Every structure is written in C-alpha cells, then in structure tokens.
Amino acid sequence: MKVSVVQDILSANDQLAMQNRELFDKHDICVINLMASPGSGKTSLILRTIDALRSQLRIGVIEGDIASTVDADRVAAKSVPVVQINTGGQCHLDAPMIQRALKQLPLADLDLILIENVGNLVCPVAFGLGEDLKVMLASAPEGDDKPYKYPGIFLAVDAVVINKVDLLPYLRFDVAAFRELVRGMNPDVRLFEVSCDTGEGIEEWTAWVSQERAKRLHGS
Amino acid sequence: MHELSITQHILDIVTKHAQRANAERVIAINLVVGELTGFVDDSIQFYFDMLSPNTLAAGARLSIRRVPARVRCSDCGKEFGPQGCRWLCPRCHTIGGAVVSGREFLVESIEVE
Image 1 (cartoon, rainbow over the protein chains, first blue to last red):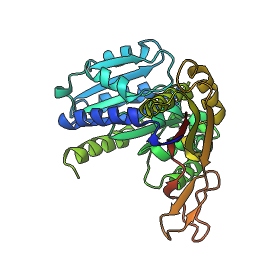
Image 2 (cartoon, rainbow over the protein chains, first blue to last red; image 1 turned 45 degrees about the vertical axis):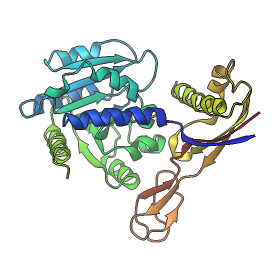
Image 3 (tube, one colour; image 1 turned 180 degrees about the horizontal axis):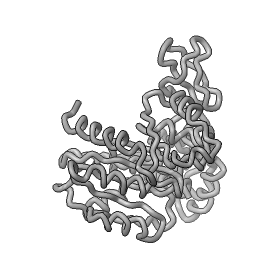
Image 4 (spheres, each protein chain N blue to C red; image 1 turned 60 degrees about the horizontal axis):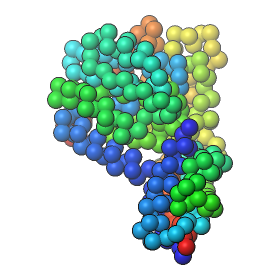
C-alpha cells in the first residue's frame, strides 16, 4: 500500500524556528545567524560588532561550538550576556538548541542577538533558527572560489562579509571577481569588506546591522 | 554528520505515517531532493542503514528523486538551468534570478504493508 506523505524533512525544525521567531518578535529583538568556515573570524566580528554598537543597542550572544567555551569566554569578557551551546559533535545549530539557549538570556533587556553558528559552510544553511538575517563571513585566505564549491550558503544569506582584507596584498583573492560571482547567484545580497584585526570596514557593516534592526522594529 | 540528523528526521516522519496507516513494516521510502540542498544520496543511505534497524522502516528501500536547479531570469522571466555558478540568462544575459526549483527536500510517499 502506498501512503502519500509530502512532508518537508525539516518541518520539525522549522516549527520550532517559528516559535523562536515569535519570541523574538514579542521582545522586538533582531537576530543575526552568523555562518562561516572555522577560523574565518566569526568571534572577532562579533567582538567588533559589540564594541561598535553597544552604546546604542543592548546585545546578547549565542555561541555554537562542537566543544569548549573559548569563544563564549572572549565574549563574556565584554560583559554582555552570552550562552555557549556545545553541540557535542553536531556540525550545526538547530532551532531546538536555540530555544533552550534563549531561556538563559534576558530577552526583555535585549535589542540584538548575534548567533555564532558552528564553523561549517554546508549544514547550518538548512536549519533555520528563527533569525531575521543570515550572514556569511568569508575570509580572504580561504580563497575566492568558495561560491563554486558551496552555492547553498551564498544563495541563502542576506549579506556576505569578506574578512581579513588587510591580508589581500599577500593573497590571490580577486575581490571584484568574488563580488560578481556572489551577485550573480544572489542579486539582493549585501557585500562588506572588513578587517576585524585593523577595524577597516567595520563601520559600514555595523551601520547596516543597525539599519536592519531599525527596519524590523518599525515593520517596514 | 549533517545527514545523520537529517536521516533521523526522515525516519521520524516515516514511522509516524506508517503507524497512522497501521502498517507492519515500511517497504519503500520515496524522497525528493533538490540539487541546491547539498544533501548526498549515499550519505543519507549510509545513516539510514545505521538508524533504521529495530524500527518499522528496517530494510526499507530508499529511493531518491533528484530535482535539478531551475532559475527564472529577474529581467526577462525566462526559466533556465544554471551552469555551475554562472547564473546567466541564455536569452538576455542578465545575471541571477529567483530559484524556481532545486530546493525541495521532502518525504513524498512511503510504501507499507
């Protein structure tokens, strides 16, 4: 006997992501899901973002890692609320993990939550967390051919931040070609060039985050 | 690791529907997987073989229908299959467009007895 099912395989995750979304809406919190390869500078970008925006926004952080609290410790040193999720081997965060983590954050006192996903360019894309914005960090030393290898993430994100641009003189990374490639796949994507080390370009990135937060707040 | 949790989701959906149909066992599972999802058939099969024993779906045949990527040109509206990452409209040469298909990831049906 054939039984028709037609159910999205990720529907269980998506339902919980919707619940997270409702919670964010209730508290007027803008949430960014930051995805990238290991070592691309996700934590450094979060620290730079905290420094730049903490005078205008109340920021909380969720750190996802397979193990350790190294990243959360760096964030906690900035005296912002932070929750470390250890996935214990799973290569991505999912909506149930975020739901549990949110219980440990003072939601009523937050305007912006930055979620650092597990370092991986494939799996995090499939699991919505209820976020407002998906952002990918691509560091220059990783090479300019990433869009060829991981089209899924470039299609899914609202913005791509190219990090470590201070190293460009020493690398074969064609920024113009990279931009053209990414735009070709995702015409609406915003592109930023930053160095979390020198601080170059950070202002443009944080201005965008701030604008996006304001947009969502006023429902436009 | 990615396909491990995915395959668990598939098994959950399949056993739920099999129980609803009062089935004794699942013979076949029909999945629809879009080209842009990045899921690998062999990997889903590998984890299915690992996770399915002692469930209603033990020994079921996994059949995966792949859906190719199709994009609609944002300028002239022509639908085309992108060539790698060059999403170039073959008619008007505009770059990019809206994804029409290729993102599917469904349990379409199961066969039970």
